[in-house]
Image (tube, rainbow, N blue to C red):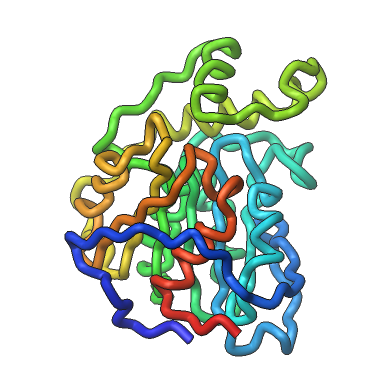
Length: 274
């Protein structure tokens, strides 16, 4: 159950996530298809829907390991953007607005209270989706932005050629096993490049009201880009409770530090682990 007044949720609050893993029972979920339209299930009644947006170039597989760690109170829905996984034949979209337009109807179809999670570029998508949901009369309960500074408030790397993109990718700690294979690069780099361009070009509307829901910004203490200072800029885009959380790890801590990341989310949501 989500309690609307999350503990320790102050605008200047800061906490370190404990390293202990959750003692949660695993359960199966179906990744949404686009965020797709999930089939209704009696097992989802009363659960909180965790809608997760991946890093640039990523898809639902970025959250595969989360499914085994989530408590029973949460149901995972992982975003599959155009141009990857089963949507691989679709052209990638070139802007944050287009990506949110694409996925919003499916997010609105998700049952139960909504919690949005976005990692890196996915934080931009989660934040914009939160605004659209609020405008539609269904604001999410909480927004988690992981490993990202706020749009318009932190400097972004310009998108260069494939070699420059690969250097940035490796700087952030990514080393996909197939990066040296031409066929892998041919499939991965177009989606990555499209997301990086959308990331660099996006600016939120200047005259838009700030989000009033609780926002938690989580960062890895070894991340060379999304530092504590960078993720703290999100406080300027929200007027509700805000806090930062530090986790041991680099930019890809949501994949390499899964128990710690989920523990941080569950503690802020005040969900019982049963």
